Length: 403
Image (tube, rainbow, N blue to C red; front, side):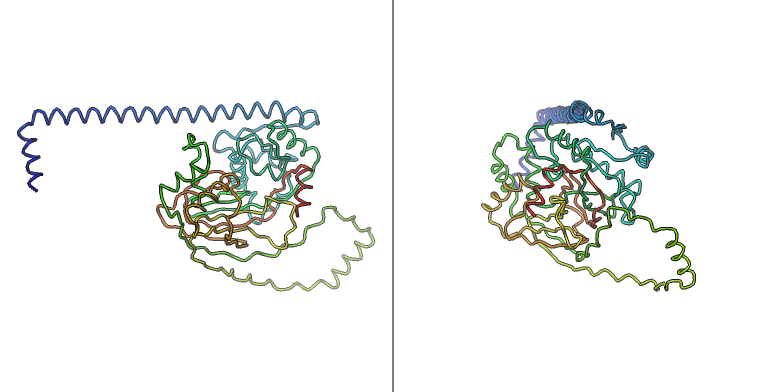
């Protein structure tokens, strides 16, 4: 206490110097804050300029590598750029007049188009209209993990784009599942790959911030030093998988002759079929589980779209929270290169739907198809075989052989 009194007495006795020091501190603080604000504005401007550069680069890649193939094949292509909100109405006007939809871009473009399809009511659980329209995905972005399951994986960008474009001409398609991720506060988000939440996801997102650490292991160690253990506690509820109904025949059966159709109508008139009373739907049986995990992943089976499954399901993976610091660095390095790879001894649950109950604050962020979203309590529903994508022959044969 005596020391505090002594400090105040010194400031009072030298009030001129104290006033001058306060003015200097205020001026210096204001100058530093102005410099920081200027740097923030410059960074935002550079980010926007980079986005415009990537957009122009994607346009050049499409016009140079994909558009000539489509035009030489005699296709009439109508290009719609997703540059602004409110394009759902314009897309809706074109959707019902088209034979196929070609998405040229990266993961962000793919997810943006899914949002538009939802606004148009084409991704509802009861809607079967759009599932018959084939979709082509031409990878133009920096990260396109979905295209690795659909097209020939190559380090040559031109070969990757031309392979995806030629798959449109060959006409081979595969059905893909869609995840509907819905919260009470935000609009639904849709994913073709999955949702990630946890420590390994945070490490992968921090790679761009620690660009000066060339080794991914060093980046993992840097993240490890900030906080340990990096576990997540939440409540998980999920529904069991639903048996997959038989596939509908692709060929339309021939129409019966006229005499048989007349006989069938007369028979139904005199002996109408007995209609069974509607059955009440069975209540959904949710299983609850309190979990503690390093990372939670909810993923589709679109990594191998040709795999025959007996049930419609998504895969919930819970990485164990008992890893040591060394194991965390090793597994974090692996998952940075292959995000959907599970850790050894991870718990995997097949489900048709899931609910995550997260705390109100401090839950971090989700990674949904390589796009960042604020983590909150959500319900994840599976929309089985909702979209049909063009697939190249080479990866289709490789996946079939692997199965």
